[in-house]
Length: 347
Image 1 (cartoon, rainbow, N blue to C red):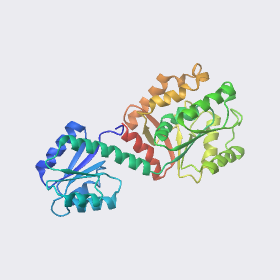
Image 2 (cartoon, helix red, strand yellow):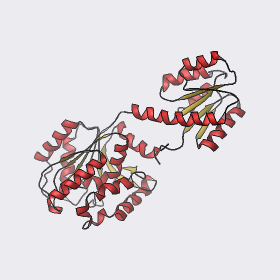
Image 3 (cartoon, rainbow, N blue to C red):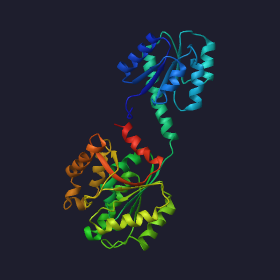
């Protein structure tokens, strides 16, 4: 599985059985395993351990396996549960299945069948949770072509993998920085690679205003797509268009729950990020997005893959891992945690 080692909670009042199951799953299936000696302890464990699969015995003191299964279904109906017992009978199997167990195993356990069931159900459980997770609607705003890819190309790649809806709004065609037609084609290629929708507007490069027409333009896009997360330029930037984009965006997205500002090559030393998003698994995709802007790579050192990689590596000193994109968070809702958790899980 791409999401890391399967996390398994093993529940059995016999410590020898619990140790055996744990050892088999850790050594032969590469699982991360914790154990509990009864149903009540298992419920407590799940408060701090996000299990992909629960493997539980039936006969236990206090809260038995079937009662635990019922409690799990009430608390978290998406987590798969494997029920095991030493008493082979139709009655036990029917009771377990009626209580919505995903798998029924008999003791002594067949190790191969245990491993197959746990790894399969862990993948299925993660797929269920991913499908049930509310998707975000992302709007990334840049003053010129390639601005958002430089600032949050890795974050957008993470959003894309999560199945979020992505829209890129570029306020000008960047005519002062190159051929406008070429930059338009490059922007389209990058958006297509991300699976993003592209709005490419015609404000005058180097003369973008922070109010009036720019605010209304952004408001139109916001009204159409109803974003839940917005990324834009920082106010701490030497380029007047970048500062104007920030000013207009903060007004036009005033009712959006989460707004964060990214770093550009012209950001000043006053750029002070408060969120560091790991993009270890998305750095290669970011470089591919930037490669779409071939007309700029010969003259813009900051598009050089080594420069981009070094910048991401520098920020990792604050965010961990090997590559990070920094963000100044203007305001934030709980949903913003989504990409953060995705980038953690896929390490």
